[in-house]
Length: 468
Image 1: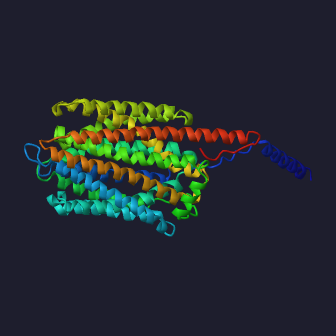
Image 2: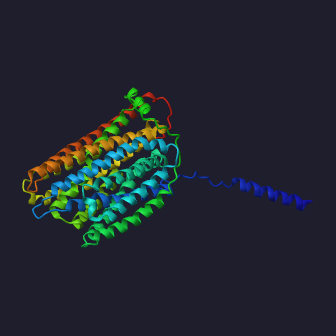
């Protein structure tokens, strides 16, 4: 009996001792920013960028160098072809976006990305099969039509997947990292493809084979994207437009997103085309074009790391103003040169300044486009908002492409390899770029003001902030 009591005492002491031992804290599982879906989104962004490098740099270079005589005859005609290519491309892209939203409501957005990836592969196939015929006025619109259609599928699905997969509080960091990876792609591929493309007779053909492999990986990664949350999205553009008009004050930041998107379209994409034309006309080499792109993109990574380290919501304007100022100064340097043979140094300076600094504006613009809709609690209208964004973007792109086409027409009338009106086009695009920067400053100030007004209205309440 005594042994039994002692045994019970020992058991009770053990139980008490166990109670005193602190239990291990259960930590909540912190959701990863860069899960498989986020990584796949970045992979798709980088892979489609490679195909864009092929089309926007080397295909444009092929068109520009086609049927050019020793005295420069045909250059103006080829600039007209490039202008026509982008007019058709951007027009189809903008119109398609008015209708894709109706289908996106009913099917998985990753299917749209996959269809767009297949169509991007068909663009490469079309360029390969047509050979030298692809640079004629007959087939330029055909290639542009398929390219525009492929982008309408890919970007409409991709943009909405991004909005639904990445939470608002991670938007800035995710888009900055995505931009860094995008820029890293532009470091390696342009110079590599440039040297391959310069191989006599077979270079361009080898590049197209590489593009087929890239397109296959693009299709594969598109199936790995799974949204965290699917919003019950509507798609009624007239109704959404009416809501924006009736609530101009509360939706002002969203209006400014659309305005900045228009000026982005009228400047960013056309600047890329103009840089390609200027480099090819001045240096006459794909490898030089690719080397410039790679070197200055590598430098832009430093800019992105600085931006990530010092970025604060209220300080975004301090990054924007110096960028548009320095780019404008570089453009003025190009326009002030009267002797075409002396353009090399100003072009290199402009290429460097633009490539290194412009990534800041792109990162701010991308994050605001994806985030402002949700900041205004318009989650269910993401499809309509993206459609408005793409229509405004396409409008700006078509405008600058028309200016480029007219530059080719009027320079052709002047003859003797004139680039007078090409410089006029550069000046016009520069003005659009300044307005792009200014509109982003307006947007940042509007967001800060709205945030301050919200804090004043709820100063006596405990608010759990869920959006940044």
